[in-house]
Figure 1: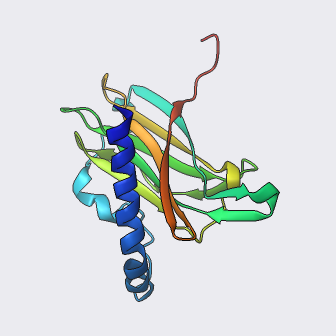
Figure 2 (figure 1 turned 60 degrees about the vertical axis):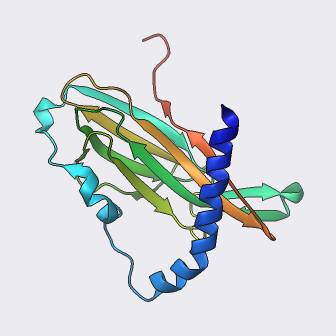
Figure 3 (figure 1 turned 180 degrees about the vertical axis):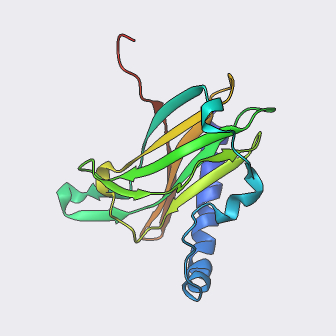
Length: 183
């Protein structure tokens, strides 16, 4: 069961790395959009009124924009993609905040300027490019989501992709609900 998922991740890494050099030159020709969700407009629907959102949860998602190796002498830079996937077949998933923090716990960037709703089975993503190492080795996202009625929990994870020499690799880090023990 784990082998097909690993194979898929390796294929995604190969595709991402193979297209990264061509895409980088194409992207440098145009200014980046200030809206990180512009590519996912087809995944969005109008959100419910704030008073209608009765279910809320915060999810902590580890991210690794850099890794340290060789006894601290080498630093490996990674591209990070945060993926938020609505697993409901019938209900929209409300995303109220996507915040990116660095190793010291300082807010680096807020990615959702206003509440959005992801259509059933829809996905939104946020990309941290390889050259953006502001997050460091202990970077993380906090995703605040909700719904107007009970809904299946979304899949929220980060995918890290990088190269070292001629080798490419990718790995995932699942999100964890932020809960207070004893409640």
